[in-house]
Amino acid sequence: METNAARGDSGGPGRIFRLAREADAGRLRDIYRPYVTDTAVTFEYDVPSVAEFASRIRHISAQYPYLVCEEGGEIAGYAYLSPFRERAAYDWDVETSVYIEERFQNRGIGSGFYARLLAFAEELGYYNAYGVVTLPNAGSLALHKAFGFEDAGIWHQCGYKLGRWHDVICLERHLGNFDREPVPPISIAALSAERLQEILGKGEF
Image: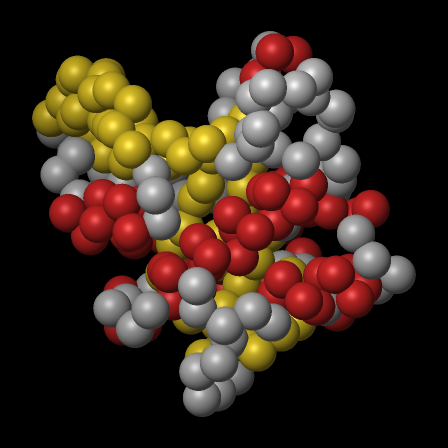
């Protein structure tokens, strides 16, 4: 099954969501660059190389969905799930990440990403999704609240970047049934091509 070929229409004109490929690394790095250099959205200080970005895509895609959105044939943004914490008891938790180039923002792409990320998280057997947001960020908070995330606490002055300390809020959404013994989540590679298409091709939730 060639999962990297999977793609689906969003319901919007000229817009598709698909799985990322390592060949996308240069474009995705360019989208990420201003988040590193000009904002505290990410706490990373140095812009990664294209090779490092390709390695990240490969590593994350082995277990989790790593998505891109194309608008009119151009990649407008990307999003992925990743581990929330590393200890074994956190195996049923995922963290969401979304990055959209500024000129493509406020077009519903973030909602499209979140609809698909959460659908994948449930399909793969995860029980909790977490968003970690540097404050202030009204747009990100509104997006999370629209998808049922609730406040799970603020980490005060926990990151230093661009000459100041920043607060971070953790938001959570429960996905699973906590009344039964959990089974280990599956990887995205375990999904059939048909199921991948169904999730990628969903309209906006």
